[in-house]
Length: 81
Figure 1 (cartoon, rainbow, N blue to C red):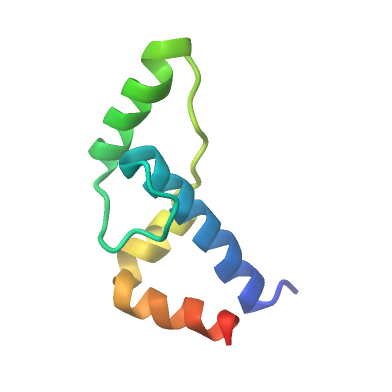
Figure 2: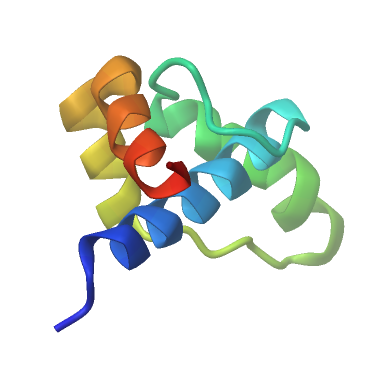
């Protein structure tokens, strides 16, 4: 079984990647980023330039959307302590 701390690390890295795509900032986002905004940035930065796309899993985004920043921050603090 994969420990909770590993799942949190995977989710954090995915969220940082998503935030970088949208806001050029490789940190955990502090608010929910709408799917349309992610798509528009993918279109601008990847699809229209060289017909590529940065792969993002829906699972980490769903977890972040469901729990929100404050609750997720407590999860991430658990693995940093």
